Image 1 (cartoon, rainbow, N blue to C red):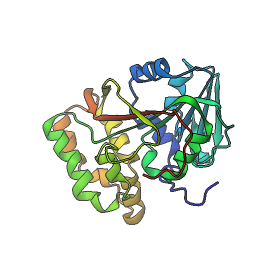
Image 2 (cartoon, one colour):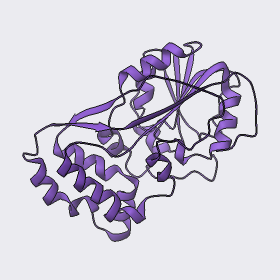
Image 3 (cartoon, one colour):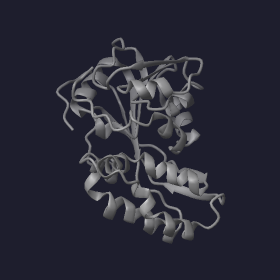
Length: 258
């Protein structure tokens, strides 16, 4: 395993699985429709296995890898999914074997040039690399203001520098293959207040703040957030801006850069 793995999530894999939002099913149907085949998909940095589960409905086999053994141990098992502990840069997957690679909310943690070399090695010709990320949620103006205050004012110094790639929607990241146009996809959930609080606590900056100060940073906005939300069991529609980048391997090339 590469020594450069930046582990921000192994300390709370169950929280991560319980409190992260779902990606739109339409996204996976679309990715399957443009894939050159439906034999094997690789969900890289699978985390709790959320994307792998969706992909398993379209592909004969899904390889779901993560550098965190704790995340793999807590991932949801399903027929057709092979989980493994491996870095993005050293997957252990056979060459020219993969129809589709997906990377959900994780590319910014990788050694990107090394991952692109690995993607080039394992993808079939015509294979697809799909990477996506989502930024701050949108609920209602007063709630959004409080979440933004937590994100920027309280946790600003605790975010890893890679977070700027997420804020930019991966717009400044170069892709290794021919980029493809695609439809827009919407990412929405309906959550109550405890679900939102759990999500905010899964942020890497929240956990870093808590470790350093022994204080839950989400608690600092809880009174105002509770007042703005109303009854805790009330559910609200939550939107996340979803940014998708797609590319197709048409030639085998090397020396990638981000």
